[in-house]
Amino acid sequence: MTPNKLWSAAFHEIFDSDVRVQLFEEYFDDDRFPETDEALRKRLQDKYARKKIDLVVSLGRIPLNFVMRHSDELWPGALKVTTAGEMRVLDAKLPSDITGVFGTINFGQTLDFALQLFPKTRHVFYLGGVDPAEEIWRHLAEQDFKRFSERVEITYLNDLSFPEQLEELGRLPDDSVVFYQGLFRDSAGHAYMSERVCPLIVSASNAPVFTTMGTTVGCGIVGGVVTDVKGLANETARLAQRVLQRGTVADFPIERMPPNRTLVDWRQLQRWGISEKRLPSGTMVQFRTPSVWEQYKWYLLASLAAIVAQFALIITLIVEMRRRKKADLAIKNLSGRLINAAEEERKRIARELHDDIGQRLSLVSIELDMVDHDAHKTTPRPSLDEPLQHLNEIISDVHNLSHRLHSSKLQALGLQAAVKALCGQLARQHSLDVQFSSDNVPFPLPEDFALCFYRVAQEALSNSVKHSGSARVEVRLGACDGHLRMTIKDYGVGFDPAATATGLGLATMQERLRLVGGQLEVISRSGEGTELTAQARVESSLQQKNAA
Image (cartoon, one colour):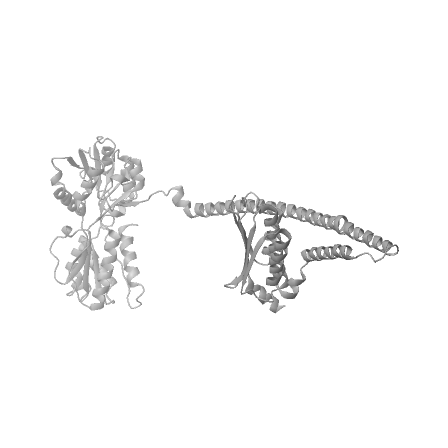
């Protein structure tokens, strides 16, 4: 954006919101449209004859000089504010009825910056015109460049016409840099616009170009320590607003802008092979071409997140599918084993009924027949004690068999009595020391809950009798903290729970407890016995029973 547009935008941003303020803009284009001082005064006097002007803001040296000469006649009583990029360009000291904001232009700082980027530089070429303003800039540059006289040779091209300057820029020595401050009128008398000739200068030059004017960075110039023209315009507009509100300039001393900033064009750094690491701290880099990551970072992150989510979902599905297959296989195997176990149990009961109880009943029948036959031949009558004893044993075995299939005590007297009776029965049958203890066992319990613990006790005690070889078994049954817990411990040979985790007995007990929300824990080591603990939350089971 050109300086004039920056000033206009700054003032409109400040004053457009106030409907009481009306802005008028005038431009001094003396290079292209020459106008005498008197002609300009007359034109402005006619234009604003019927308008009361409250504030006049002059931008630069020439408008300021005009205001100081004619403002009392053209705009009597108007407050006066001025501004310039550098206070040294003024022809005289500001009078007391004018305040303003001024920047700082230091040609030496920009040359320091150029020499930092190109330390082998031996020649500096200053490019400008012969307009009075450009003569002032050249004079200031000569003052700032004095300290470099022993380090570089400085050549001023102001006395050449613009075509001659372009030709000269094309044959500069390799160890050169160019300093471009602006071009308004060349030595041939032709007028130019600085921003428009800037690309021509850059393309013609075989050396990097630097400047102190921030508005020209972007047309091919490397950069420089530049005046913040936009910031200067904004500060001037704010000062003008305060002066207009207060109605006086007496309370507003002249303001100076903060130190200039170092500004570079990233594209020119690439062109001249300058690493950003060589830039001073705080340098502003403009026109940087964003990388693919910078341009599409959020798209890439979103895509990556979607890919990761999909990948995680796929892994989860694969794991779940394998787990499902494993569970299905385990269920299938368990179902098969349960069917086989049921068949084996039927066969066992059938064998017991046929081979044991049936044969014994047949023997009792034969004995009774013999007793009946002998009763007709001899006196006294033969004794029935032996057949009756055999018959009582059979009745007892049938009772035990029935009890193993379904305990009537469990339903009538509860879990505690049924487990205690089971312990006593096994102790008598197998000559074991089975110690039973109980504490605070609720009664009654839900039927499925009590049956679960009873079957677990049957299976665990049966395994202990068959496999442990222990002469002593401890059974503890009790409720604590809302949980029913049953522990069965023997002191036998023990086993490896991991190696038998798929056994039917353990699987059956785990499945029974799972159905009532319980869990099974088995602790065993070879030669150290086995401790089995079954527990489930009893309160929820009682609540379910009460609800039913």
